[in-house]
Image 1 (tube, rainbow, N blue to C red):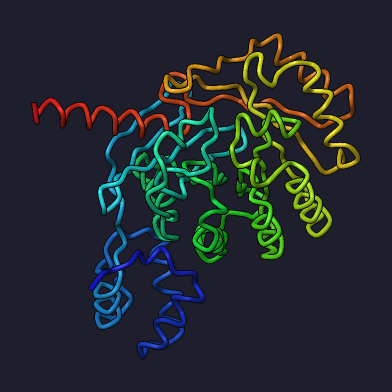
Image 2 (image 1 turned 90 degrees about the vertical axis):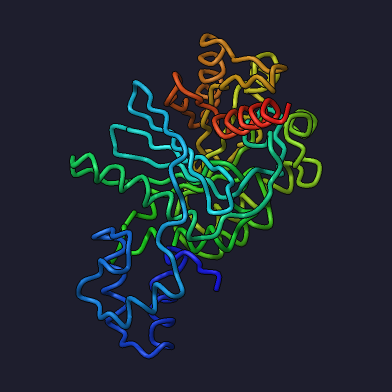
Length: 361
C-alpha cells in the first residue's frame, strides 16, 4: 500500500476519514492536536488516542516524508534547507528572520516550467507537483528545527514563493493554505500568508473565488509586453492586458491590496522610462497596489543579467513615488549563502552529476 502524508489532509478531511473508518468525531481533534500543537513524528506517540486508531493511521499514512539533505545558515539568521523527498528529488525551503516574526518560504513543485530567464528555479524543468502534505511538512520541518532550539519561537508568516509556480499546483496549494490557517493547529493568520504567481490569469480568478483571504503577489517584472515577453516567456500566452484584467477582478472582489513584484535587471528594465511606464500601468489602481522592487541575485547560468546599482534602484523608487505609486524595496536575506531561489538545489544536483561522472569514468 502506498502511504500518503497525513499532513495532506485538512481537518475536515481527517474527520470524515476517521468517521468512515468507524471512529468518533472527537478523535480527529485529538490527532490534529498531536500533529500540529504537540508536533509528534510518530503515531505511536499519540498517547491519549487508542491503539486501534493509531495503528489504523500508521497503516494508511506517514508523518515524515522529507529528510534534511543540507542546511545553509547565513550571518543574518536566514536558514536555507535542502530537503530530500521520498523519491529522491530535492527541494528548497527558507527560514527568514524579520522584525515582525519568522517567515518561511515554501516550494510547491520539483522544478519549474514557467521559464523566467532570470530565475534559478527554472534551471531544471518541472518533474512533478508536490503533494499538499509535502508542502505542509516543509513548515513542520522548520518548526521542529525551531522547537529543538528551545527558544519558544514559532513560524508566524508564510510565503509561497519557492521553487515552482503555485497556481500550476492549485489544488494542493489551496489544501496547504487551509491546513496551516486552521485555528486548531498552526493557526497562521491569513494576512500572514502570501502566494506569488508568475501571472496565470485564469488561476488568479479562481484563487479570488476561493475567498481564502490571503495575500497575493504577482511577478510582473516589466511594464510592457515586448520587454516582459523577452524576460518571461509566459507573457506570450498571457499578455499584460489579460493579466491586468485578472488583477482587476481580484481587486474588485477581494478589496485587498496586491503586490506587483519587479526584479531590477541592469540596463534591461531599470531605466526611468520603465518606471514611468510602470506607474502608468498601475494607473488608478494606486490605492490597492504596492510595487515591490527586488534586487537581482546573480546566477552563473544567467550571466546575461547583472545587478542594478543602488543609485539606480533609488532613482527608480523615487520616480514611482513621485507618480503616487506605493513602492518598497525587498530586504535581502541570506546574501552570504546561495540566496537565489533554486540556486542551492541546482548547485547540488550539478555537483552530484559531476561526481557520478567521475565515478563512472
